[in-house]
Image (cartoon, rainbow, N blue to C red; front, side, top):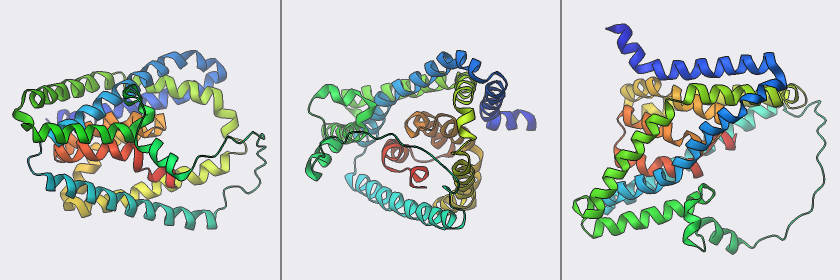
Length: 304
């Protein structure tokens, strides 16, 4: 019973970790020959990236469309912005302290090629291009995540006003949301093989470079990220849900963390974050709004 419960909680994470470890060993042993596995890893990543746009649009539209009280939406968005800014400041303070103690560029000789600067955009154009697209087809690209989020919130609000989850469109959205999450589960079954192959080709191609001038920076960056996760994540979970919050977070964080580490992409990690929050017990309307916005706007690793 205990073994079955343990495997049920951690089995997928263990398989994912084993896939990454085996892939890393293959990359080190085979070197550049490991790049033959690159198509397998790319196929998995492409599946993850492809599902992101419909998942974001449908999940946010469903969550907002199901809301009868728009004050809750305002509270979620307000809390979201405060937390994103607050945790970003904590990450920034941490890295300022670390790099002043361990300067990452000491002894590095990295030659940067010169390039031509394009025409700079005005602040107004940057805002317009960040928040909107000039054609509906632009909403089908993961490169335009903020416009997709804004459009999905607007669409969900309109569904809520026109009958909510009991309306024909509301029922369709809820059904499509269940279908999308089931599809994500199927894709994630390929994760140990896909990420293992991706890591093997990555290390095979860039391994020697990473041990050169970038090595010191990596030896500072990754331990700092781990330190931040060990210190800050339990604190955030405790503030959110007490000891039970810390326990649930610890139980389900490994798969999203490994996916983020392996893919280096917040967007590619979004499906695993959705599944983890569902298992943790985060309210559905909260994680379906917060996570897609977080994949674009809340990047403490990038701050570091």
